[in-house]
Image 1: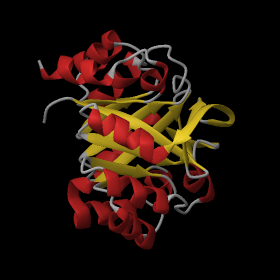
Image 2: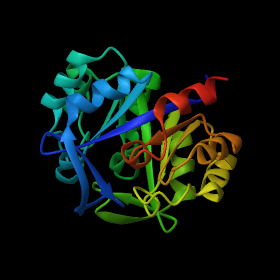
Image 3: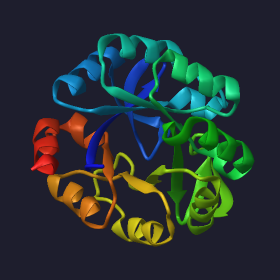
Image 4: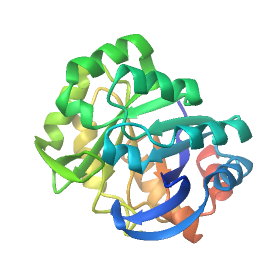
Length: 239
């Protein structure tokens, strides 16, 4: 697999938004989600990372109609995250147009269920490992669990996940650079591919996370502020 640049589209109230450190009260920007999806698709994205923020907080998907609308305007792959905590919600996300789904809270609370989904759907199931201060965050980042990052990586190995998005919440939306030490430690333990997320704000940051061994970078804030030009980034990693 070649290294992927994956634009993030965070959904709140049917619109694309950007938050600082995942804080709903620190909304920076809002735009029509379909317009954003078209923009990143036209710039050459091969996948979109779509996050249902309301769904993550409520424990059930809220933005499936927006996912349907995005799917209607683009053929690129979509991974969908937020509130997927039942067989029905996972199936509904796939039916609405998702190619992959991201499971976060369930990694700690229902590992057997995640393992079953990995057997059923294979690499369409992605682990969402979100860390704050070395601990795993759950419930849409609203709560910290007792699980350490190292423990959730080991559990994810046992569940049979083939890919995980690993996010440093304290870096997310802050344009301060990625936590390379965190990715190094995860990659030492992981038997799955790692996608970096959080703080990536320059072409140099992309090269840095690729250099430690991750297989992709999810980029949000830096695309919306113009710190990173998506076309240039995609061309750089393809060279």
